[in-house]
Amino acid sequence: MTSPCSVLIVGAGPVGLTAALCLSRAGVPVRIVDAGDDVDRRMRASTFHPPTLDMLAELELAEPLIDLGLRVPRWQLRQHETKQHLVFDLAAIAADTRHPYRLQVEQHRYCDLAVEALARSGVTVEFGKAVSGVEQTSDRTTAALDSGGESIEAQWVIGADGAASPVRKSLGLKYGGMTHTHSSVLVSTTFPFHEALEDLSDVSYCWSRRGPYSLLRLRQLWRVSLYPGTEDLAVAAEEDRVRDWLNYIHPEAGHAELLDVHPYRVHERCVDQFRVGRVFLAGDAAHLNPPSGGMGMNGGIHDAVNLTGKLIEVMAGASDSLLDRYQRQRHQIVSGRIIPQASANRARMAVKDPKRQLARLDEHRQIAADGERCREFLLKSSMISGLREAEAIE
Ligand SMILES: Cc1cc2nc3c(=O)[nH]c(=O)nc-3n(C[C@H](O)[C@H](O)[C@H](O)COP(=O)(O)OP(=O)(O)OC[C@H]3O[C@@H](n4cnc5c(N)ncnc54)[C@H](O)[C@@H]3O)c2cc1C
Image 1 (cartoon, rainbow, N blue to C red):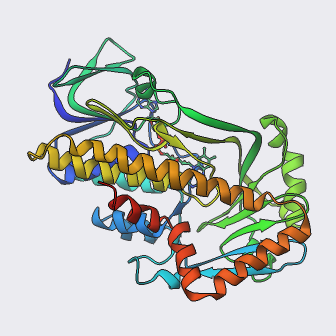
Image 2: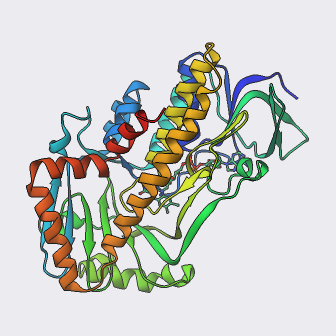
C-alpha cells in the first residue's frame, strides 16, 4: 500500500487524462494509472466539437491541438449517386463559442499532449497498472491492482477505464441499453477524396444506394466509416469487401493504401448511477453511443470537466452533496440528449430508398437556409445546447 492520494483516476484515455489535468492544475494531488503500456494509438475518435475546444482552451491544450489538426468550419450531407449536397456552416454559431469549427485530429494526439502537460505539472501517468476493483468505506477508497497484491488508497476514485470498466463492474452497476447487431467498419486511407470528389466538404455524411458512409478528413489521411449491413465483424472487415465499397465511392479509392481497417459494433448504453459514494464513472465507462456525429469522446471529456469542477469545490469545503449534481446533470444529458441524438443521426443516414434520401436532404436544406433554425440545429449537433441544458439542472 502506498500513501493515500486525494483522487485516483483509473484509465488514461482522453477522459481520465482530462480529469487528471483539471485536478492537477487546481493543485489537487492525483494519481492516474492505466492498464496499457502507453497511450492507445489506434484510430478511434477524430472530432473535437466547439465546446470541447472551449474547455481544452482553459487547460491550455486547444492551441497545440489545433496546430496538429484540421479546422473544419463547414460540413455536408450528400447523396452519392446524384452528388446533391447541402452544407452547414458553423459560422452560424460564431457568437456561441470561441471555436466555431470542428477540429479533426486523432484522439491519441490529444492524449499525448495531455500526458506531456501532466508531466510538466509533476504528474506521471502510471502505465502498466491494471485496477481489478474498488472498495470503499465512508471516508476512503481502496483500489486493488492486478499485479503483486498492491493497492492504492484515495479519498475519491474516478473510473475512466473504458467500455469494459472493471471499476463499474466492481460497483455492481448494470450497463443498460443495447448493442446493434450490424457491424460498422472504420477505414483509414491516404486516398485524396478532396481532390477526387467534386464539392466535397472535409466532413461529409453520405447516403448511397449501396448504404450510408461518411468521409472525415484529417491532416494526413481520410477516415471512412462504412456500414456494410453484415452481422459478422470479420466478414465486414474483409479487404476485398472494403476495397469494393471504396471503389463505389470513387473508382480509384479501392486501389489506395489502407492504413487501418477496424470493424466494431455500435452500442447505446448508459449506467443509472454515475456516482456510488466516493467512486465516480466517466466517459465510456458510464455511457456509449453510436459514433454518428462524433459525440462519444466529446461527451466523456464533458463528464470529466463537470465532475472535477465539483470535486475541486468539495475539497475546498463545499458540501459533498454537490457531487450528486454531477449525476443529475450528466445522466440527464447523456441519456436524454447524446444517445438519442447520435441514434437519430445514425437512423437518418440509414434511409435506403433514394427518393427518401433526397427528401431528407431537402428537409435539411430548408434548415440550413433558415438562419434561426440553422443556428439551433448546429447548437444541438455541436453539443452546445446539451451543455446549456445541463447548467439549468440543479
Ligand atoms: C472504432 C471507434 C471509432 C470511434 N469513433 C469516434 C468518433 O468519431 N467520435 C467520438 O467522439 N468517439 C468515437 N469513438 C469513441 C471514443 O473513442 C471513446 O468514446 C473514447 O475513447 C472514450 O474515452 P475514455 O477515456 O472514456 O475511454 P478509453 O479511450 O477507452 O480509455 C480507457 C483507458 O482505460 C484503460 N483501462 C482499461 N481497463 C483498465 C484497468 N482495469 N485498469 C487501469 N486502466 C484500464 C485503457 O487501457 C484505456 O487507456 C470511437 C470508438 C471506436 C472504438
